[in-house]
Image (cartoon, rainbow, N blue to C red; front, side, top):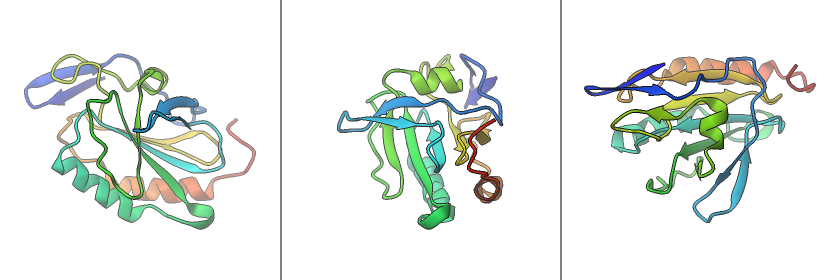
Length: 171
């Protein structure tokens, strides 16, 4: 898959996981160097957002996404922002956990690593929505780093992911 940024053309090192596949549990680190697990079947809907660049435009997108996320009760969605390395600073958003993919597990299992300049070895700009049963329910890999996520579709997919849960895990 080709990904653009201004006049540059990069590509993903591996193919992304397909919708419907069981998500992989990956170990990431937070800013305190504590290991954390994302993905897999944990009984919660998980939203994972990756990016090669945290700028003002991206932060505005995260704020819009934050407004549509269910926060409490049976329909809570955990939201995580993941970057490739510790050169990025946490944007300190209240409802997003911030993680570093220091072991490249997320990049490898989910096909998120960019190859080529200007963001070689960074994670591409993407959304991965994992349903409560651990299946990849929706993804949005933007083909141009400057493009915005499709928030309307994300909103509908979050709602759908909440009501399709059977409690039996991914099959």
